[in-house]
Length: 573
Image 1 (tube, rainbow, N blue to C red):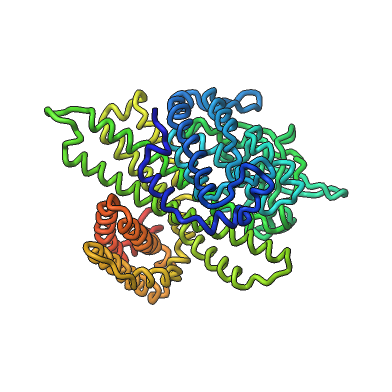
Image 2 (tube, rainbow, N blue to C red; image 1 turned 180 degrees about the vertical axis):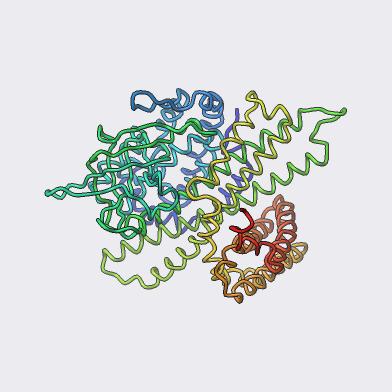
């Protein structure tokens, strides 16, 4: 019987080698929570054992219950009638089983019924579940809105909404996008107003709302009359009462089990979350760290499923007297898929740990402030963590979602004509993957988000430390390759900056971001190869390929191959 956690050696590697000691100590209040909750861990080893057991249970449900239902969920999809959304039968069963394991509040505090897990292990659960059914992640993963309430809401708001999220009785939705705004959230028009008693109400339309039929809605709305930008937006929480009308659900290419809704707010009673005017510039931006990472983990789960399908088919399908697995062109595709999977997983869990560190430092600073203690050292560390997270979370989302599309495309190609047929699961995976580089910010917007940190070379100190290390044996050559990639990046960056042409910087940004990510991921893999022999091949193939791609990127920048993009209006007439 498959267990989607324990049957994945690379995922096991990351679980076993993630040094989470400091993070777990902070999240467990130096294990003081064990005095109040008899199921809380008493030390680090106890915590790890608890995380492993929960992930094993999740992997078992994913492999043996959720995955077998995925085709039915895809076929049936969510339905809409008389203003009411109904999940597919398989989705309802999935939510029920996950609720029974208490993981619908995996990341939420124990005081509300949650399990208080670090973000890294939450992302592992998302990967595992997305491998089984990508659409389910769009329901399970929205417990993140509960975490936003935990951080920025009042105690009364947390007590009202979080317990039902933890039990699975209620699900949540991020209600941000509007018909005319799209990714430009500064253009949000949904109106928030107060009556004489100070009660807030919402009026307006929202579109493309994932799981918009949820019972707990986190809504971005314009609270400041006369404003036109993000500084006039605030964040609100409300329940889905009769004033919230689901006008329709979208008929989509993939992730059919996840309803995407159009919502109308008709003077809906709501509660302000945090402080007015901070809705977009603070709270939604904070939420986007998790949203980007959640979609990245979803993309990785889809990729893993596609690789498994392709590998199985290639070993079974015979042509010309042998399996197609023995055809070099096919085996090379599979090798590339495996290298991409493992390098992407290294990136995902490295950055997930960074997000954990950032959030734990935020919590620590709040505690120090409440105790009247100075926090200059912690504040400086948090500032640096935020700067790096602002760079690496969009790079992760860009890299893993683009890879998911490539891996599922190649997996379908390995299946040949049969892969195009509904009888084979791979065609669903290809459809499900397509949304990952669109929602929560398209790949193009991820490049825009990562370009500032790239242009400012915010990882220069970290890369200096990596270059100063002494590598032995065959690792020396790989380290030299990474130094060469970095040299190409620095040279290209200098060329772009010295032109003092903002338009040229924008069109060169994708090549620069890619080169920067090659160096970062390459050093991750090199460190892993030093402790795990199985990783040597992965590191070698990734770094050698990245060097070739970096040379191409550098040449494209210096030759101004894309210079014509600055005059696209004339070319595309």
